[in-house]
Structure formats: C-alpha cells, structure tokens
Image 1 (cartoon, rainbow, N blue to C red):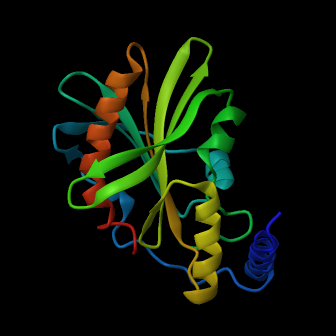
Image 2 (image 1 turned 180 degrees about the vertical axis):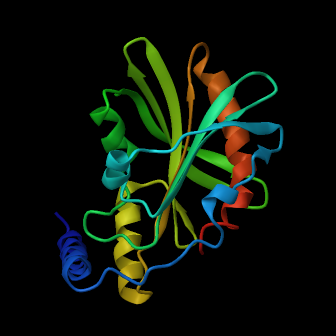
Length: 210
C-alpha cells in the first residue's frame, strides 16, 4: 500500500488523539435560535413539532435542535431535523443516521450520494438513504453543515473536524436531515424532498455559523 496512505493515517490519528485529550475547540453559538426557523417555506407549511425526551437528548448530545413536520399543498409531508453542536466533545459527537436508524430497527435498502443543484449555491452532494421497518419505508436525505462547508462523506466530515480543530479551534457543526414516508413511487417522494431541500438551503446560513 502507498506509503503516503500510512503517513496520512498517522497524521489523522495523532490529530484525533490531540483533539480527544488536549482540546475540544471553542464553543460557537448559533447565529439565530433554531426555533425561529420559518413555519412557511415556499409552498410548504409547518404542521407539527416534536420535542425529544431527556433520554433521547442525552444520547444525541446536541446543544440545540429542530424537529418539525411540514406539508405541501399536494398533501405530501416531510420531516425536518437539524441538530446543532457548539463543540463536539468526546461523547457529544454528531451521530450519523447510518448508525442511529439501524439501531432503531430500520434496515437500509439504498445508501448512496446524489448531487443537488441549489439556486445561488451550485451543486452540492448529499446522502440518500432508503430504509424499511416492517411494511414501512422512508426516504432520508441528509448532510453535515460544518463551519461553512456542506459535507456528505463521513470520512471527510472527520477529516475537516480534525483540520478545523487544529487550525481554527472549532469543532461546531450540524446534521441536517429531511425524511418522508414512501407509500408509492420513491422517485416522486425524492422529487418532493429535493424541492424542500432547495428551499431550506439558502435559509441555513442565517442560523448556522460559517
């Protein structure tokens, strides 16, 4: 295997140890509280909001979160979750949906990345995750919004976490997740979710720090 691979791995390992035992980075507050996120986003309007119990909050470790349902005039609905971490201390790291959802009984059917053309932002990569539990199916789109970056890859998320901790003393970040039940065509659900994603993207920078 390429010698550079081992060098890079060694540097990342040493850096991760430095983060773990020496510094967790400065705490960075939200620009605005997530509870102020719009209840109307284009044609979508808020229909419900769910607060987590203490046990779930302890597991998530997020400093602030939004867990809200929106409905489209067509009758379709999506669920928006944003979990924000001012600093990712040991034990309070962002939890990947690929770990949490299977732990809740959901089985992955499709796991890949897609490119979304966002007005004013260009192309961004996000994760597409189709899951099933019993007769229920859900389509989940998610990404990490971390220190001015939109990141889909779990590995790149960790890489930039290490780099920014060392160079900027920052480990803040957010998980943004849009999900919806799939009762018919997966493609139809995907189109509706992408419409919602394109509409919320320009709003995120009003709340999440760069």
